[in-house]
Length: 118
Length: 114
Image 1 (cartoon, helix red, strand yellow):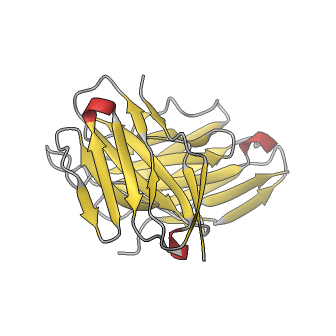
Image 2 (cartoon, one colour; image 1 turned 90 degrees about the vertical axis):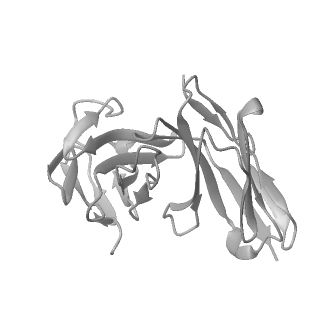
C-alpha cells in the first residue's frame, strides 16, 4: 500500500486566502485524523472521522477551519480565511478499527503539509 | 484530564551509548493505549510501538526496549548502543480506550553524535 497520501506537501499563501489540504487514507482504514504540529503547541488533534462521519471536532480552532470526508478515500481540511498563526505542519493519519482488544489500532501518518501564511 | 509528560526536551549522546527517554502519563481511564512515535529530520511520524493498559510486559525489538510501569504511570523507551540514525524527535502518546485520537507529549529531541 502507498500509505497515507497528503497534498500539497508545501503551501505558501497570503493572509486572507483560502487554503485546502487533502488527504487519502490507507485503503480499508476506518478512522481518519487531522493533527497540527507547531513549535508552541506541539502535536494536537483537530478533528477525526469514523466511517466518514466526524466524531470529535473539539480541536478545530474556530469557524475558519472546516473538514470534510465525502468518501472513504478522501478528506479535506479547509482554512478560510487563512491567518499567519495558522502556519504549521498539518498531518493526516488513518487507522483500522481494530479488534475488541484494540489490536491493529495504531495510526499511520502521512508526510504532512507544511503551511506558511504570510 | 489526559496528559503526557516528556520531561527531557533534548538529549545528546555519543554513538554506542545507551539512552532512555522518559514518558509519564495521566489518565483516570482503566483502558488505554500508549504509543511511541519517531520523527526524523525529514519530518514524517513513524510508529514504533503500542502498549495497552492491561499488558505490562516489557518489550524488546532489536536495540529498542520499552518499560511500562502502571504503578508509576510511566512508559519509558531505551535505545541500546545508539547510532547516528537514531537522531530524531521521539513522541510518547496516550489514547483513551482502543480508538480515538492520540494525546502527544511535547517530544524529546535525541541527538546522537559520531
